[in-house]
Image (cartoon, rainbow, N blue to C red):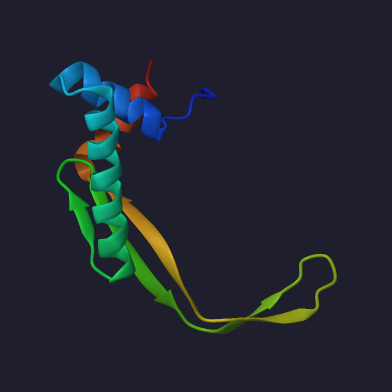
Length: 100
């Protein structure tokens, strides 16, 4: 596996090259899309991107956990967690990349 990480700057640079907007407009577009996605998730909505996957927020209830070092029981508070479920096309594409 490579150590490369795709960043916001990489995305805005790709928009700049592919679409032809200015660098500032490309950065603003990427930022706007990410803000819309984040806002929807905060409201509890799903974000579904066709051929990519679905982001959603799930409520986890309170439970008792255990410290693996000491074995001591520790209460875990209820919380919301972000989940991602890749589409079948994305799964197939990633799996095909592993065959090289």
